Image (cartoon, rainbow, N blue to C red; front, side):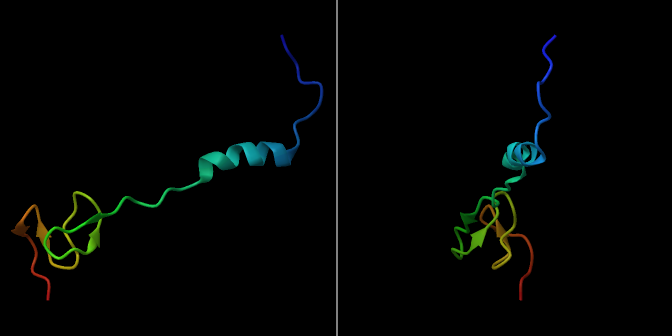
Length: 59
């Protein structure tokens, strides 16, 4: 069985694991009614529409 000759340094371990810690920003789409940026498959916070229907009343 293979055994490491030396202990792996903490910096090497942390730098290898840091690739999994990167967070991607959430995807954005534009609202077809008002053109504001919104999350896909969600009600638009600006105008309150979803799939061409008025879902919530935004004042």
